[in-house]
Length: 90
Image (cartoon, rainbow, N blue to C red):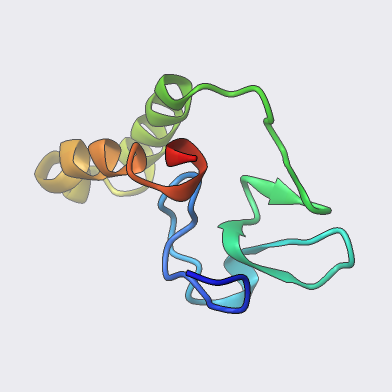
């Protein structure tokens, strides 16, 4: 995708960023089209040194708490999909 295109999921953690309130902020305070508010702020990653494995573990725990039924059904697929996101494939 180009810089002007919008993603449906955060390209760091796979959280939905369809709604503006879920999007992170660029350095110029515009909404990020790639990353969520939990991963990205002021044009930088909130946890710049987090590894893919750490991100997957963090997301798995969050998913279990916030969506326990969905986690049982789709948790493994969701966690595996994180490795395919732009942050982790560059």
